[in-house]
Length: 276
Image 1 (spheres, rainbow, N blue to C red):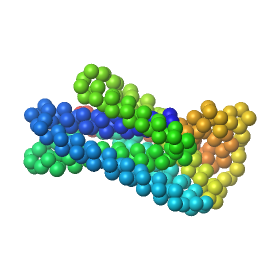
Image 2: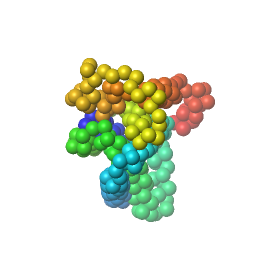
Image 3: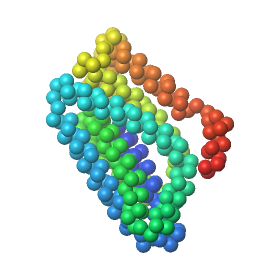
Image 4: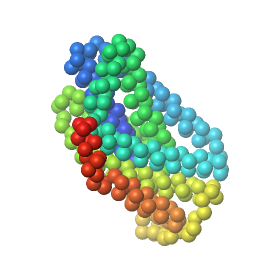
């Protein structure tokens, strides 16, 4: 539940911010009457996201045995890659996303096409929605489907409320702090997904284990207990991991964590100031 809530809250708030920026700019430029195109584009993106999610889950359900393990492991590796890219993309775009979106809206308005405005919202929200569908599939493999679904819906609900309050200017959320905190949690989540994907490939005999169990602390914190299940769903906790799983988890956090938190170079700082 916690993992799906985190995913949908982060993705949902990103989508809500994008839609809010576009709608606010349309109102500011005297084009509020064109807002319907944005909502139609958003609705279309939501439908597409649900369809993609259904296809992923139905496809996975049609596999059995080793094929299912390979499919699930591949889906988790894909989710790790997309999640990592999304974290870095948002960190970069957060600096000038408002200016970038305003430029895209101006281009659409100059073309006189309501379809162009709708497509702008469709692409922006659709990207977040398809990512969410992939992440939710990965989450359900480490948590109960019911808990993941409830957490996902709760996260989306909170994201919609926060997005509306931010749009109305009645709530001041430190977005930089929000995205930094959620990025740390998502990096830990991605590291857990990576280790779990490797576990699936162990089961399918695609990746050797090296040492099958580096340690076994189930007697201390059983991974099937309430606390263990929560840690497994959010951070990929495994009470008896293989050597390859441990090395992958540590290496991912060391490399990607350093890349995310390293100080900006003078060249990057100049680029940020130029785009601000």
